[in-house]
Length: 222
Picture 1 (spheres, rainbow, N blue to C red):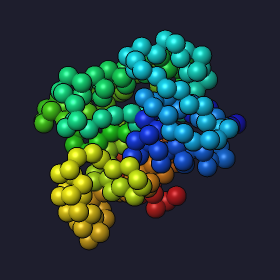
Picture 2 (cartoon, rainbow, N blue to C red):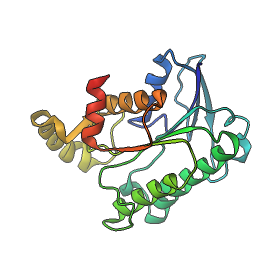
Picture 3 (cartoon, rainbow, N blue to C red):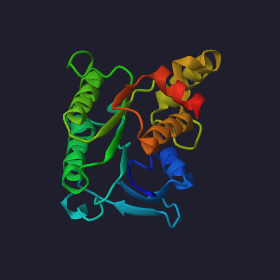
Picture 4 (cartoon, rainbow, N blue to C red):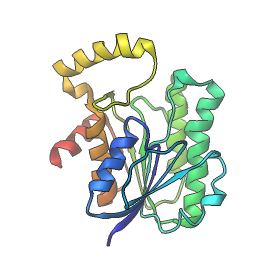
């Protein structure tokens, strides 16, 4: 049966590749894309919704009905916002989404774009704690399948790259060189998207946290 899929963060570095993979999939009949701005993709399969308040999704109840798979790629770089805003976007937005889906589509398969180093037990650096908190919130839901992806270094292949002068001119060249010598430290953004879509659309795996190596294993199997 063709799937109705929900995607958040489709304008992001990874989210845009997820969108492309979903559009190309013959198993997906409809993609509901919710974001803070339009992607501008002209495809009859895609329904774009620009939404301002991600803590209140009540106006989207009808759009969230009959969702088979949700890919949650909406996020923000910690360096770009305050700590309070980072927690709100990473955890608050996700919790509002899962609450809305639990009401409208309780059988949704939920796929979370997480991060290597997340600490669900609440220890570690602020970034790790917040990402861990988001994972814990998801694990506490009753969705039948929950897939969390924790990539290592994500190498950008498209136009969208993480913001910041330091990243673009210092970190990216260094990491790109390391990645070229030792690809096992990460994945490309498009390969991460392929792995997320392959697992989410299939829905055969039990709920699982995918480490960087496990993501790479999925890529080479598909």
